[in-house]
Amino acid sequence: MRFYFAPMEGITGYPFRNAFQQCFPGIDRFYTPFLSANDTFSFTTREIRDTDPELNKVPELVPQIITNNAEMFVWAIEEMVRLGYREVNLNLGCPSGTVVAKGKGSGMLRSTERLDEFLENTFEFLERRGISYDPCGKADVDKPHVNISVKTRIGIHDATEAEYLIPVYNRYPLNDVIIHSRVQKEFYRGEIHYDVFREFIESCKHHLVYNGDIFTKADFEKVTGLFPEIDTFMLGRGLLINPSLLREINGGAGATLDELKHFHEVLIENYRPEMGSDRNLLYKVKEYWSWLSRSFSGSEKYMKEIHKAKTLPEYKSAVRNLMANCKLEIQ
Image (cartoon, rainbow, N blue to C red; front, side, top):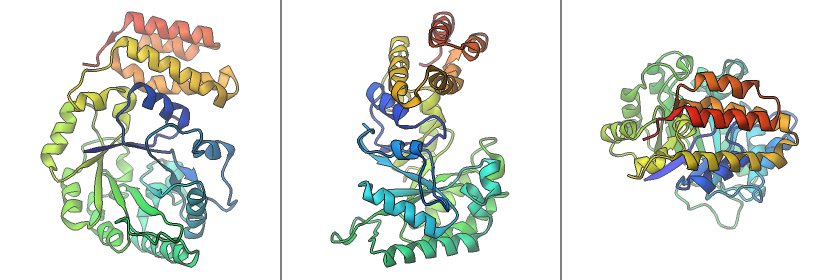
């Protein structure tokens, strides 16, 4: 089986990815938080650094792009190919209201006709630009080549919308179709629509990747029991809460307190050159603690200290207090 680390905006940039790979190896592929392809035809400094191959020390990295314009998407693909990437992922899953209002992310699912037109134009533009693509690895070796994958929700309002999405995806030479089987309006609430994921298995011709609500080994075993055909899984929030989740899935032990302390120190050191100041560094590590704290019982009181910390020594002291006084619930 293969395991992917889901992109998490604001958290899983290259300093985090490198720290995770160093301390909890095993993930086969990481994805960048989405890069915005817009009418400036330029990436931000942060996006450029996040995709710099020299800065990324992980086994495999796939840039994720968010846009609703095929020309801009192909420009972004060309930039990634120039850097040496051989796969680019299209974000059709972000449920954020501000993103959806712009018709991007899962907002692209609002109209299957427009999505169909977007994908058709994308592959036409790639051919015009001389970029080869083939999800079976048979791309023309004499041309620049790239695989296109999508990370998608199953609709906007209702799970039945999936029946109109599947034929659209089937029309194009996509690599992976990564499915979070909720609609945009559900965000991360409520039950996963397992029946709709089964519809994808039965009707979608592409290689499918399961994503959504795997927080424990038991969750993983439930999903593999429901879908024994699936050989690739994308984990996200579960890994942020419990960095040793994949190890546990593979039969190993949960993270120890010493391992989490080491991971935390590596994370701080990785952020130092990127953030430029302790203030920015603190913003980043505090954001991650909103996830990791869920592995410690009774952490709410100590999280207040972490959030109040204004200097790095204050922050480290607050973290030590949390780790010393809260029970680690990772098994």
